[in-house]
Length: 184
Length: 197
Image 1 (cartoon, each protein chain N blue to C red):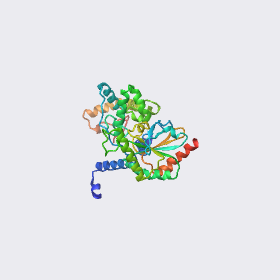
Image 2: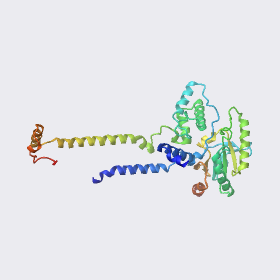
Image 3: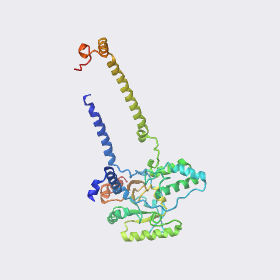
Image 4: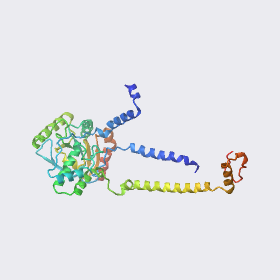
């Protein structure tokens, strides 16, 4: 058994370890109640469309990476029913969202609201993009200046280069005293 | 300028720092927005005497624990001895919120079951479980459809709320209470709330 585990490919072993860690993590020890009722659907298709629209924007607390529309966890089912019931009772979408946020916090929203603590979340990508563009512009400018400096050859260097290109051996061409770097 | 080659190293160390901090967090623990807010009012039937309703307001003036449990909840079995022990010391009244006793049980199909029949079954199951494992609760109430659970932001069982004399939720514990949790977090919190109240 032990030898088998060692021979496992790296990725598989890590996936297994991660699964094990998740399985053993204390919060998963909390039981999620099982599904009870079959998914109900509102008779009015317009209302049901609203329910679905809203359900896709709300996060399932149990599975976390699914919306309550996608999840089959019993809590998602309960919350979907709550949404449907409240919309049917004539409450607005905002009311229903507020109702859930009051109980489960902003976490229940897939799209976090823009406020003080989420400023970095919303502004971070733009800041990173600007920083990246700024850095790139600075580099490009600097490189242009550097290569301009390199390109500037003196008259003597030009003459020597011409002589070399014309086929004269290096011995025939005395190194220029202005030569910027010695290659010998 | 000479140490420029060290820049990636420091960036890497910074990243490691963030990731290491991230590992200490539990993403499954969703902070409750109800902390320091009034507990949602409810009136529910008692397990010991369903004809007698229990309301949140009945506990006014007391600091108490509301523990969400169900007989189908395996993790509740793990925390139950801790609660029984706590109850024996008479430190704090514990009220049980029996959450979706029948329809929450994956082994049962409660669809189409009449509410009365479901309530009867829930009472029977809850009583049997308490008789078997010990009853640490001052009283338990029945949340048949999990509505009160939703009001409290319950998303898994067990969960425990510390409620003060003004009926405000002061602390929420997610998952089973261990003896360590109790000693290091819940009891100190209880003391703090009592002193403040």
